[in-house]
Length: 308
Image (cartoon, rainbow, N blue to C red; front, side):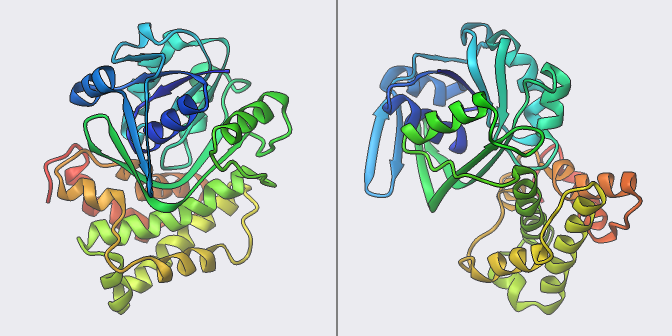
């Protein structure tokens, strides 16, 4: 099975390193000094006490050099997905499956629009990994789970099963799931709450928990997201909001969402894919989303970068 990794940041770099180390044929799309380092020295992954360095079959910034893949993995920021789709078109052949691992709940729909509903999958990554230097990825979380399924939420299609098998063969945890659509929205309820509070208030999760007004906002953001999911027919469990709160209670106090880190660094923001998406999808479903809409409005001036 041949993989094209579109975006070799934390998530894409982790997957690329694991797959190449297991003998898979992998082409990666990267930029700048990161690409130069991968070409010159290889791609290095630090995972706890283990460090591996691999050389992908192809490392390029030109989609035309990727070659046709069996699976095109999109691991970019939400605001970069539309451009990534166009860059990756040469790698997406008649039988290529498009698998997204990025924040939000709309990537699979964009891939279906671009390549066909029969070629798009749902992917959910539960991992914290980041570029810590050119050509160097560090896995920062003790966990690394990748859920893969079809647009119907199921995992029993032969080609989906083949992808899961390839990930497992590379030492990537790809668990059996009943409905990945539920997993997608469960993560989204947690992520909108974490990103909305830590970014809009410019604080860490410890301060959110210690501030009654912010902790109430955290809950409200999760509740609104869960309400949108249910309005769209996703069978979230009754305790979906409770699960998001449970996760927020147990995060180390210093944790901030990637949205908050991007804001502080002056980078472009995924806000239109997070709270902005909840507000937009809520309006379409006729559900009141005032808290997410407020968070999106507060961060809108920096959606194209510039810091705060």
